[in-house]
Image (cartoon, rainbow, N blue to C red; front, side, top):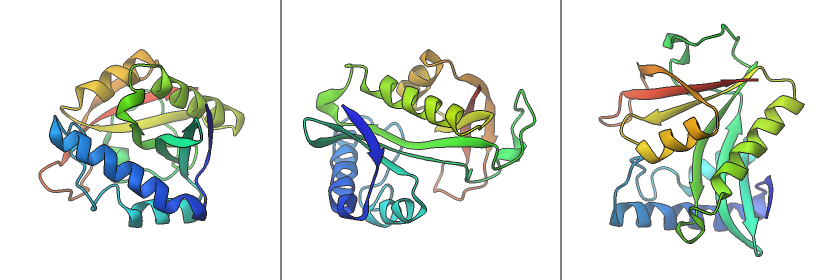
Length: 173
């Protein structure tokens, strides 16, 4: 298993990976409320590759996980009751974390989160922050297990359908 930045040559495969995840979620419970071909999508992957913040996790030469890690919060993060006042650009934001369903419960998500923590520390960031759909209980459990602290539910004013409120988590480094 290794993690690396997604490159232009990976856009199609990464987009297909996310499409596969959304189809899987739609067959059960779509906790993150992702929408097939809308988000995450080829367009969002392209944008994040261009920004150099889309990552892939490779296992046995195939994409088995993906996430976005950058220092650009989306929405009104300033509304949260963070435990520590940190300027934008001084913390990282983890988004769109996904694991191949066949690889779940094998520690891959925790390994990806550990990668993010190590990267944030090595680059001098003060924290990692995350926003999660209110009823995305599997993600909440994963982040809490990884040491993230719940700071509250906030309307991030993202204008995403009927999902105005998100649960926010932080890990101060």
